[in-house]
Length: 289
Image (cartoon, helix red, strand yellow):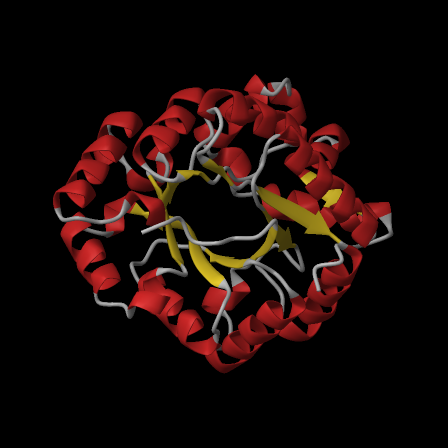
């Protein structure tokens, strides 16, 4: 089985998973019609994401549905592979399961060594015949990026910059998938935009994996603690749709195969009446149709 087709640009949305199911399915249909190549939905602390993947696959006909990211502590390899094998062949071809180790502060003492735990989970998937082409890994640090290219279709980094994309591509080499998430704040007022961006970072600034990655990218602990404008401007495309277009171009030029745009409509998400006009504006600016 070959890697699912993603196109150059997709939409990453927690609302498509946790919002009203009927509205979510209708929004997925529109995203497909607008020309986006993939829909990315989060995993979360529960284990219910595969059901939402199946729902979104059923609502659409072409677009790939991907997870960013299934928490491997909430799934068993055999169970996940059996669910995937039970999908119709045309749905399997449109499914990409992003997997991740989560974070020590969330999982607790059993978190263990991330690389070893992730590799063991991938061993379990290999043993039951899960196709590697339909897997990718949440990857920020160099060793996890390398593992993603060795053991899955590639990497799905989150809250990163084009500079990180260039570094990840250098590690992966040619061939493996590199699909970074890119936050977008479509607000012309700088104060409003940075308030939204800072709210989106509130949780992540407490997690060592992200802090360590931002430090590797040249940000100081003080900048991270304060949520300085330099950090916010690096992590988010702020302004009109043209700012998102420029950032997508920067990631692609740095070596990304696909960029997932996450429109920030509030610190805990927004409603589809707010999001759909912004997704339409981005599709038009990106000339997806």
